[in-house]
Each structure stands twice: as structure tokens, then as C-alpha cells.
Image 1: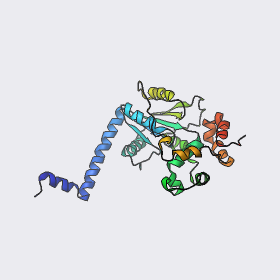
Image 2: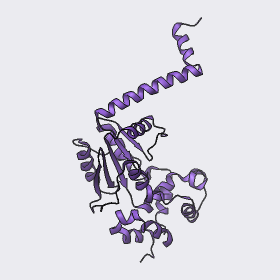
Image 3: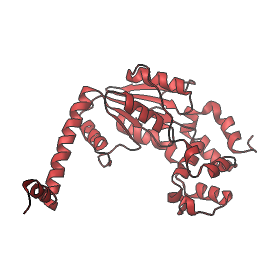
Image 4: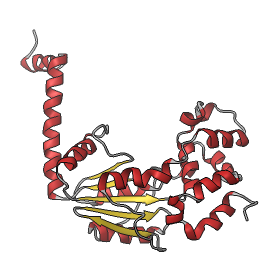
Length: 269
């Protein structure tokens, strides 16, 4: 004969009961989350991927008194219940959110993302591939969605928060804070010095003595050796033209275009 506790646990495993309990727990969690984000504005590390967000996210998460969330997309369909809840609440009322986003030179960023998603874009698991470097380059040029970083800021920051980062010039120092009513955005280049990032985030979030801890470096990945050789290869002029003549590159990397071209093509003028 089952004990009372065993009977309760068994009942909880009945599908429709489990569904009711899950719904109740989700509702309770959402209400608790909404209460807490009204006490302290949530920090939303909202970026395109492969721009050095991991270090900032995990460091802020440990040192900020409120919630710190991270994703590449903002919608009600996000797997993270906190982000989907944040989205739904924000659609109803424009309450304060402190957004942090990063920039990266687009060719380097795309190559990094390609290797991160090697199987998706080549059809072969990295450990099982036998491609030459030239074949990997062809797969990169053919299969990767190269336009994504060029349009991400318009598609996401401007679309969701009505902040047009192209409406004014971007400082040579490599960072800028934008404001639109209750929304603030700290935008910075991923390759500025860590000490500057720490000062920026410390002031932006009011975290005294904020420190970054570096993680998720490409050198620790299984593809590190191939990646190191790949980035020595030349990229076609047509590809560099597409990436470096873009609105994104003209806005954020205008002073560096010649240097970037030379980095990716030995024959660059």
C-alpha cells in the first residue's frame, strides 16, 4: 500500500495533472520575475553572437543585484522563460531595460561564427570532417549567412527599442550610450581594452570595482588549430567589398577599412 507521500508523487506524474502543475509553477515564476525586474532594471546582454558577450554576461550576472539576461533575439518564443516574459511585459508597458550590445569587425565575426556552427554550415561534424582549408573556405563563402551582422542592429535594436545607432556618428573611442525613454543601450567594440570595458560597465550599471572574467575563447575550442590556419587565408575581393562597403562597416569601422582589407587579402590595395 502506498504512503500518502508516494500517492501524491504518483498523482503528480499523471499527464494532465503534471501539465496543470507546470502551468501553475510557470505562472508563479513569471509573477516573481516581474516583481523583481521592477525593483531593479534588468540587464539585457542583447547581441549578434561571437562578439565577446560571454565574459560580460557571466561577470555581470555575478556582480549585478538584479537579473542579467542574454540572447540574440527578442521575442515571445524565446526558450528562456525570463526573456519571453520580458518581451511580453515590454509590449504592454515600456519599463526600464539596460541593454548591452557589442560590435565586431564583420569578417572576423563571421568566420568565428562559422566555426562555432561548423556542422550546421558544412553538414559534417567537425571531428569527422576531412576538408582541406580551401574547401572549408568555399563552404564558408557559400553557406554562411554573411548579411546577418550587417543588418542585426536595425533588425533588433532599432526594430524592438526604436534606437537607431546609425542616426549619429560613432566615437573613435569605440563605445557610446544611447537612450530612448526608458531604454538605455551601451554599445561598444568587442576589442577595446578590458580595463575600459570594466569602467564602462561599472559606471553604466553602478557596480563599484566591476571586473571581467574571460571565458569562451576560441583557443579552447576543438577547432582551434584549424581556425588559426584559416584566418591566415585570403578572402575574395568581392566578399570584402560586400562586407566592408556595408552601412555597418562605414558606420563603425570607416577608419579601419584599409587595415581590415590588408588583414584579409595580401593583394589589397
